[in-house]
Image (cartoon, rainbow, N blue to C red; front, side, top):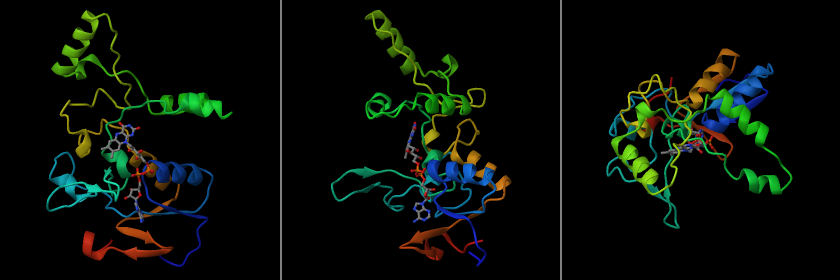
Length: 208
Ligand SMILES: Cc1cc2nc3c(=O)[nH]c(=O)nc-3n(C[C@H](O)[C@H](O)[C@H](O)COP(=O)(O)OP(=O)(O)OC[C@H]3O[C@@H](n4cnc5c(N)ncnc54)[C@H](O)[C@@H]3O)c2cc1C
C-alpha cells in the first residue's frame, strides 16, 4: 500500500466489504480494499478449492472453533460468496420488525437486484423431483428454494461450493468490479492484522 490518502479502507472483499466498496465508490469516495486471498483462483474442483477454503490444506479437514463448531469460510476476492450455494431467504425479518425495524423494502430491493427467483425445473435433481412427488402424494406442497442464480448459465454440475466456473452464481466479485470501475483499488494477498497490513508471502507467494 502506498502513502496516498484514501477516504475509506475496507478490510475484506466478501459480501459485506464489496457492497460497502461499491456504495461508497459510487459516491466518489476514494476506497482501498485489503483482501487476504488471491484475486482469482482455479475453481470448480474440490482440490482446487483448497487454495481458498480456510482449513487444513494437507488433511483437507475444516477448522473448528474451541467450542467444536466447524468454521467454513473462503479467503478469496469475493469472500465466501464464491462458495455459497446461492439460496436466498429473508432471515429474521419478523423478529427484526418486532424491534421496530422493517426491512421488507430492503429485502425486495436486494431480491430484484440479484434477480432472485424460484429455481427452474430443468435444474432439479432426480432426488429433488422424487421428494416433490412424495410430498405431493402426502398432501404437502414442497416449494423450491429461491436462488440468486442465472439459470440459463447453470450446467447443473453440482460444484457450487467449489466456486462456479460457469458464471451462473451471483458473487460479490460483481459488486467489487463495479467498485473498481468507479475508482476503488483492491490489494490482494494482504491481510490486516491488529491495525497493521501484513503481506502473506509464505501462504500465497509473492504479492503483485
Ligand atoms: C459453503 C458456504 C455456503 C453458503 N451458502 C449460502 C447461501 O446459499 N445463501 C446465503 O445467503 N449465504 C450463504 N453462505 C453465507 C455467505 O456466503 C456469507 O454469509 C457471506 O459471504 C458473509 O459475508 P462477509 O462479508 O461477512 O464475509 P465473507 O464473504 O467471507 O468475506 C470476508 C472477506 O474478508 C477477507 N478477509 C478475512 N480476514 C481478512 C484480513 N485479516 N485481512 C484482509 N481480508 C480478510 C476474506 O478473504 C474474505 O474475502 C454460505 C457460506 C459458505 C461458506
